[in-house]
Amino acid sequence: EDQVTQSPEALRLQEGESSSLNCSYTVSGLRGLFWYRQDPGKGPEFLFTLYSAGEEKEKERLKATLTKKESFLHITAPKPEDSATYLCAVRPRGTSYGKLTFGQGTILTVHP
Amino acid sequence: DGGITQSPKYLFRKEGQNVTLSCEQNLNHDAMYWYRQDPGQGLRLIYYSQIVNDFQKGDIAEGYSVSREKKESFPLTVTSAQKNPTAFYLCASRGLTGSTNSYNEQFFGPGTRLTVL
Image 1: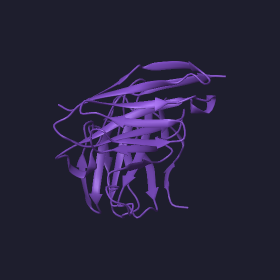
Image 2 (image 1 turned 180 degrees about the horizontal axis):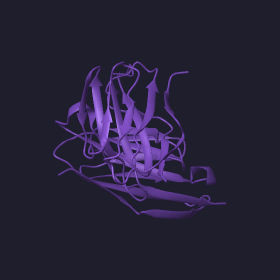
Image 3 (image 1 turned 90 degrees about the horizontal axis):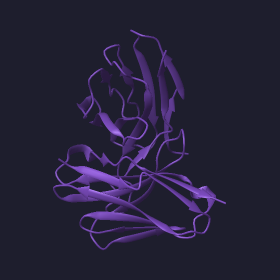
Image 4 (image 1 turned 60 degrees about the vertical axis):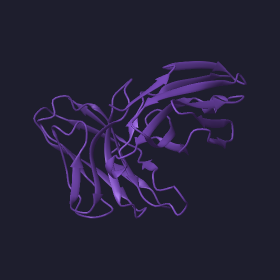
């Protein structure tokens, strides 16, 4: 069974304190790994897609990396506006219609 | 502007009542999805549709029904058979975005919060 586990469940940082969020996955072949940002009461906002081990993508203070078993979302010098829930999802090979399996999310709070 | 709209933003249901959540997209996407989100849990797939007049059950379809009569619309009905419907409901769509390997991303609407009274 495909599984996605995110850690930690919650992370509190001071402004400027860099850190990483983890997404561990178990799938029968990976077709894509996705990161989303979700603000309270809103729909998830797409951030990155990673397809193969060793791949990295960056957007402002965020950088996503991928290995064969996990992905990291690195946050460099975070600001309070980076506070949100970060969701990780995988699309296993052979799944129909682009079905995704999501982790439970990491709630990030950045204090000024 | 292209995007996905969901309505209403808040919905209240009485016991034994069916309610329908609207999802519309003008992105010309082929695939559409409905997810349910509960506190502390990941998104769980209710139904999905790849083309008009075709849809498939997801992981938690019991107590829900959908239709796909138009490419841009994918309404979800929460029936009285769904015993614990209070949740945040998210609609998503997916299609070709014009760049290599960009076919996979799902884009989400703003959500509908359903509460049972």
